[in-house]
Length: 136
Image (cartoon, rainbow, N blue to C red):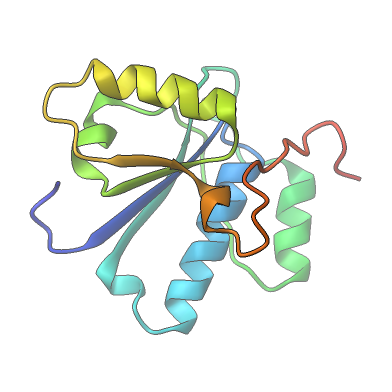
């Protein structure tokens, strides 16, 4: 883990334009509201190359704006360094989890705990479905 003394969380989905940048923005807002954002390194990334360099989906941005949640992100892909510098890598579905675990096994000195973000859901909804084709 990085020696910054900060806690760290990386949120991951397939393209890094819907679920993971929303999770990043919401988590950052919660940390800001709690007065602890400076103690966290927060980011999001993709398991694919599909949307690299693109902003979050406009529908997700509009939703975050309606709820007063600031959102600024440019899609990027998970790097090997992420497995060595983030404490938590939290992904949205089983496909993301499988790909991240495969990648983590190839990274020497990987320290990140790779989990489904939904495993922290008190309602036990472990999978966060991709809204890309259903966001209105």
